[in-house]
Length: 85
Image 1: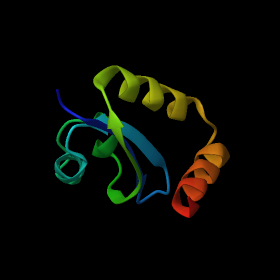
Image 2: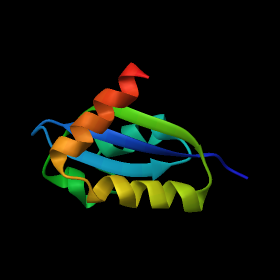
Image 3: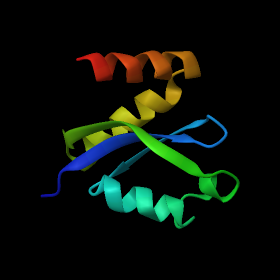
Image 4: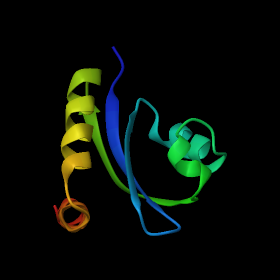
């Protein structure tokens, strides 16, 4: 069974993209090459700002959905809180 991760990428327009993957570094490289997510056709990924590991596919999808529902300010607070813990 694969271990899934939830991640957030900050883009060159300061937007935040949330996704899931079994290999976050590989997925980030794919985003850099504009492979996969249509979101990155009009913006460039700048950096990974959040990674949470240890999920199965279902829990990663649920966590992703929860994060995507957050307002931008809530996401920034969430990212900041995760860095300080």
